[in-house]
Amino acid sequence: MLNNCYISSLTVLASIFFLTNNTILLAQNKHKTSHVVLVSIDGFRHDFYTDEKWPMPTVQKMAKTGVKAHMVKPVFPSVTLPAHTTMITGVSPLEHGIYYNNKYSIQGKKDRYTSASDIQVPTLWDITKKANFSCAAILWPVSAGAPIDFCIPYTYNHEGDHAYWNWEKMRELAIPNGYIEELEEFASGKQLTSKIFIHDLTTIDNTGAIAAYTLEKYKPNLLMVHFIATDEIQHIEGRNGPTVAKAVAATDRAIERIKEAAHRANILEETTFIITGDHGFVDVNTVLCPNVWLAKSGIINESNPERNKAIFHVAGASAFLHLADSSDKITLREVEKLLKNLPDYQKKLFQVLNREELNQAGADPAARLALNPIPGIYIEDDLQGRSVKSSSFYWGMHGYIPDFPEIHTGFIGWGAGFREGVTIPVMGLEDITPMIVRLLDLSPGEIDRTVYPGIFYDTDAP
Image (cartoon, rainbow, N blue to C red; front, side, top):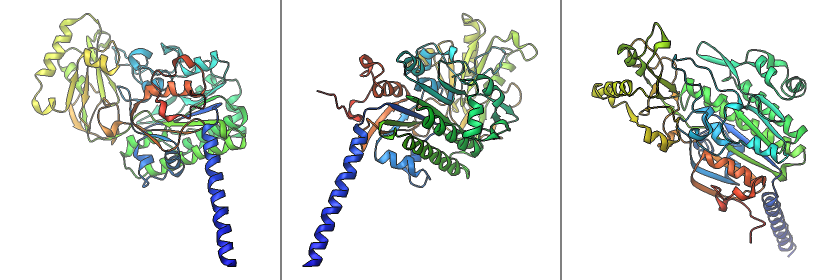
């Protein structure tokens, strides 16, 4: 009899514990959002949070207890800077003006977009500023000079085939003055001033430390943080390279660190996490060099680039044809004829997208046509040598038009406001901005534009 009473008591206690914990979880989700943490994992794939072979326990648990997407379509080209700008504007590159990672030049120069003034539409940091909300951006692309309270712009230098952080330039551009020095003392340590390649795992650790410190001390209403190493490592090693799992695990640890900072700051219950990425990844083995065709035909002038009549501007795996004179129909027809007369074994390696198709894809309005290679092929801007050759360095690539699963990215929404256990079949990167506007109640009149109503706890709904 005593044993039965004891068992009954344990059953009641267990039930109370279960109900209490579920009530706490529900209460947290129904909490009004005061802080949004937008995490971008460069090269983020949906299998990272759906396949337990990948060491992302924190992110996978958030996916199970929040909202997740089965697939997220990137922009075209599916590269870092246009994608990140779509995340914080809600529109395609055709509208926001960041068409590629590097600005087009008829001479083939590769000046990178860095200044926020290049963005042609309102951004999340503009909207939060107007609402007198605070904003922080850690290594967020195209953020230099933006009206952001705490900002470390994304900028780096190249050394051979690798890139390393240009911390001296970041120190110059960082907001406010002394912010990086403060981080060196209290968050990341002095290694910020040394040469750290962007694919180093140290980059992930530093980024997580900086984001966590900023959230805990300054409690911005919107914190945007960009983890880059997962991209660079997949470029070098491919989708399943030996270091990819280490980068995934390090990023997961950094996200947990940011969560812990929110807890210490007593804002976790009113904080919403959005975890997404800019594109997926494709294993590659072959390089296509269409500018070799233009150079051989005289359309590109190797000795005097100022006299180039046209050039293919490379963006990740794809390339976009630009004319020196936008009204030069003769050169355009010459390029179209050149492509049409290629041997079949070359033509089958890519598709040609015309201007109407580029409009539908939301791509650069100045491009006359684009080459989108088949998976396994990517484009480089070489002017000499073979037009088709084996890859000598990159074993993973992105930049393709987003019409197949490997190039898609992912989405997880967790914390205040988000329901539990909801899956969105398909969404786009343009859906991120309206979600954040809705969560922070920044612009109530626009929240129904592309927001999925079934993913939120609408406590004020009729």
